[in-house]
Amino acid sequence: MLSVLHFIMTKVKPPPKEKPKYKMTYFNVRAKGEIIRWIFAVAGQEYEDVRLDDDAWAAFKPKTPFGQIPVLEVDGEMWCQSWTIARMLAKQFGLAGKTEYEEHRCNMVVECVNDMVMAELKLKFAADKEKMTWADLAVCVWMGWVRELDYTPYPKLAAHRERVTSHPRLAEWIAKRPETSM
Ligand SMILES: N[C@@H](CCC(=O)N[C@@H](CS)C(=O)NCC(=O)O)C(=O)O
Image (cartoon, rainbow, N blue to C red; front, top):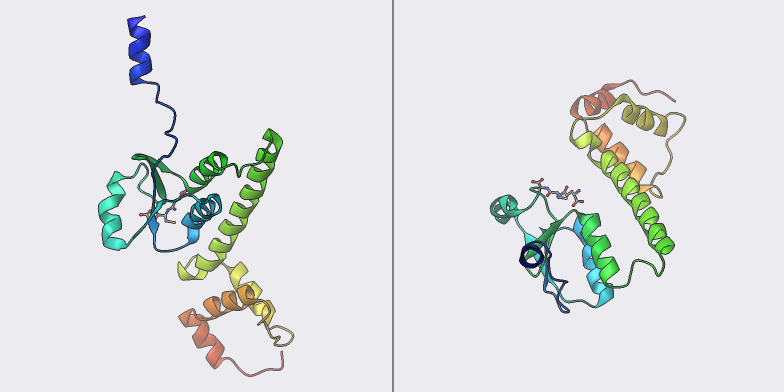
């Protein structure tokens, strides 16, 4: 009996308090923190929105479970992984569907969103990190192959071409190549 009591007192955590204190720590950007902020907003839940600069991050990093943010502290207990935090809060605040199947549907859509974000980030940073492949080049060559189109309605494509063609050696080639009709 005593050992059962000991187990309960040391291993089994008490259920969350009725009014827990939430503290969300991230950089001063939307990115992976914004879904958490939106869930708090929709739930009408108060929380501390801590936004770190680089120096504060260097000091805080060793205190985080995986050296990354966002993290959420609930009554001092730290949680990480943005989608897990969001899913946990969505459940707590009644935003995760009314049935088990609705919950799975929510997760399905969220995973699609994550796939899209990751694909877009790959595109955004491809040229910046010099991980440009010839596929990036092919897309941009195609964009001006037959004739110059106005890509203003397609800002992502336009931005992609801007990044690729700002590569110094490519910019040099484009500046010096012979003028031709196509
Ligand atoms: N899978 C994690 C990834 C978190 C992540 O990549 N955090 C980045 C900021 S968006 C970070 O902490 N970067 C600083 C570092 O790694 O030192 C999540 O979704 O929370």
